[in-house]
Image 1 (cartoon, rainbow, N blue to C red):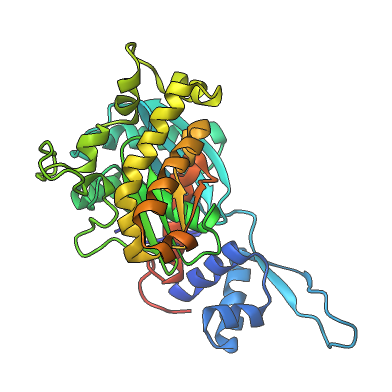
Image 2 (cartoon, rainbow, N blue to C red):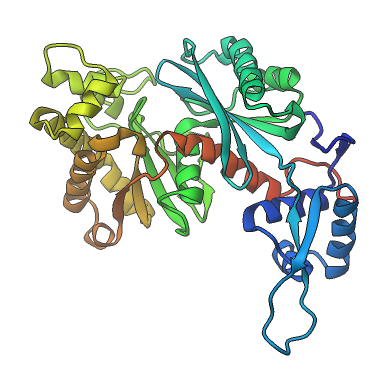
Length: 382
């Protein structure tokens, strides 16, 4: 994996330097004492690391923090420099590939998309378009490539295609991570959206296919094989149709390969996504009934999952727009009917707040967690 570098000097950051910058990006300006408390490092170590970061212009020292009268000399606050690091996040959108650039604080500074055929499992064909789209996004935003320190590729299935990741790292010359799209949506909503401040949630994705991401204790729960949250492959019919996963009667065989396939059951003509969501916004009875049916269908296995995990909240894919409300009604009905009563009474079912940016910010959250664990740099020389 390429070394993590920063600044025009191209020098790698030590783990201690990286950790303090990550804390400042997430929490905002902090005093040295606050940095010591949050990082768990000794105050003398923090003072030394901050000094090195100041000399490299990676952080700045601002005005003293306000204190109560008579409380002594106020500490000066340390903040990240204006040349903030950026995360590149590559996600699937309807009909193509999206490249987005965001700060570690969760501000999306640039994004663009291109029509690209998305392969089912072989992601090797994404190497060229992913590299090109990221280059285009940087150029159109007038941003230097040196500010991008890592990339995350959102994939529509579990697992981590190490070969594709390694080849993309060679192209981009930065660390690259892959993560399931539903998991990224879950992390985005947990960190920046509807689940912010809560310890546990289930994020239900319905835009591209049926999926769920599980966050427990503020972190993703992937399971031993990386298959946790694969709601599409929970059996809901004992003698149902064969599924692509090798099972029988999976939820995906009932709902269909896409949201539009499920909706199409109520209409003779083929509808597009925009038309379906417009009809939902107009409260067209047929569309709203189909979406409520979708919620009840998905809600049945969700009810069992809620009973086992007892999450604080179920967050429903915010990219559904006006169609989110009837889906939530259907899910709520199934949870109330099939989950353990004490769980049904406590769990909330809410719309996502981030819409199609949930995955982008999920990529940011993923790297924030890795950075706080000193996951990028090797060694710990202050």
